[in-house]
Image 1 (cartoon, rainbow, N blue to C red):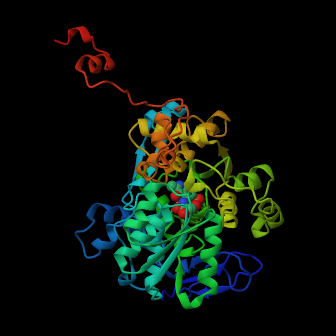
Image 2 (cartoon, rainbow, N blue to C red; image 1 turned 180 degrees about the vertical axis):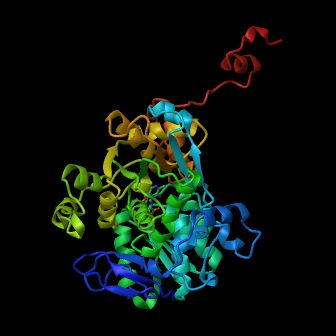
Image 3 (cartoon, helix red, strand yellow; image 1 turned 120 degrees about the horizontal axis):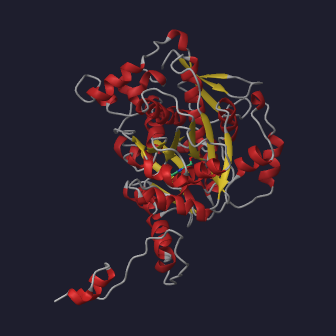
Length: 470
Ligand code: F0G
């Protein structure tokens, strides 16, 4: 195992350390989350130019397989593996930072200042592939044969894809009726054993954690973002953002918040880059939740819970969770009431001078349509980042001149039902149950135009003069 990496409990009163080769998803001493930490003094600090060089030469040198990956291209920044042979990659993370000037104009940002980090372009269609590349690498290092996760859909799709490619058996837990069909179809097609339980994501996660911890005979390696190796891979999303901006740090990173793995990973990425002297300032973080699934908003923004050097007020969290508020949002990817990475997200908010906001479902869908209209396209949860940016501009928190990066976490085709329902008012899921429901279409809906199969009618529908049809 890497001699310069170890696992460490994030609880400042514990800080127990563990070998990198152990399979842990919580501190065995106190139950807190774990970090992967590196002995940076004994490791080579890379220069940005190394990463640039790899981007331009992918596939033509000896390390081509690794350089082709948008995660492992930055391998010196997640050096927990022993040798290159450990590394699992499928060419994840070849994603782009897009200059979205039309969307910028719509939401009130200056031209050239809004960038969309288009993670839907990953092989399984969401940012999850970044984390899976790292966690599957660790799984291979420890000889795991069976991997599992609970999911609102994207984690299960990514896990199933990576398991299929690396010959591991995959088990995914999903809430009954809680998953967009695009994602369900992926888990099934990639051959994962798919367990649907009556319950939501939080219930699924509880069960899969129990099975991994309490039934060792099953030999399950847990792939949810309580696995600290997942977050190592997701740090790379921010490395790619920096590379696209020629290593200039933006003013804001805006990201949807569900289980809070991404925000936690981004906080760790920027902390380490700063420590290494690769950046001289840290951008601000805005985490956007749906109003129907807003525990971090409630705790951080409403109740003022702060990281407080690791002594955060967990009684407030427990009181909130005791209220058993069901999570409910059209953004099914972030329909999560009890995010497991809450402490790490509080830490990220601290180091990135961050804030949390909430946006409601109609606003999320409207911004999804906006992102789609200008040629990018994303699933509902992803659009929360753009909706949240507009809100923060309106609130005067984000300046019109600020340079903002919104992470588009998942592809448009993940949840076609939500898109069709927004534009037509037709609920495809209900229609499949033989009970079509017709809601009014969305405010900026692009309704299909129904026309008879008749040339004059078609010309009229297109704004032409039907009288001119001979
Ligand atoms: N956006 C998308 C498209 C997601 O799939 C998720 C999480 C998030 C945002 C939230 O990210 O958890 O890091 O705060 N999806 C998980 C899943 C929970 O099971 O696929 P987070």
